[in-house]
Amino acid sequence: MMRMLNPLLPVLLCALSSHLRGSEFEQTLAKANQGDTVAQVQAATAYETGTGVKKDIPEAAKWYENAAVQGDAAAQWKLGTLYLGGRGLRRDSPTAASWFRLAADQGRADAQLQLARMHLSGAGVPKDDVEAYKWAELARKQKNHQATQLIRFLKQRMPAADIAKAMASVEEFEELRKLTAGEIGVPLIAPLLEEEDVQPAEPEAPETATE
Image (cartoon, rainbow, N blue to C red; front, top):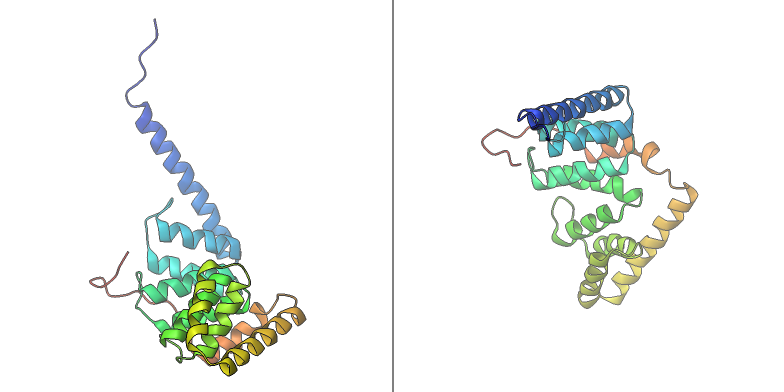
């Protein structure tokens, strides 16, 4: 005769699983504190999503920023999205654009597309169709479908001379990328942060904070 399972077994297994996840997070956090950018992004993601730890967007932003200033393009992108959307932080389009720019300079298509949109609307950056076209074209060349749509839209409203100017900027960007062998992010971060006046992550007031 089959013995009945202990009704507390599912609860115990759940508690054990939670403990293991917590232990794994502690190991990740220890590496993050030692400056490991991969671990810093993992810790930030855990705080952002509430995986293995209580959800805490300002804390996520702190770890994304620690990795971002070391040149991690994914962290730069994520930090930009938090500032742009005001998710748990004060909404700050100029600061978001600064982080997107650092990621875009390293070739991230999603950051390039976002910069294009911001230049098109003038959100956090000067309104500039030429810059919008440049960043959209760079993202399009990486097979970003939304960038392709944006390029079609821009071609309908821009004079040929401005499109030619944008394409010249694209060529300059690609040449610089070749010369730096894809390592543009780290050496240029300090001067760019100073020039753009990127602010550290600050918690938004509790009553206006968003998830």
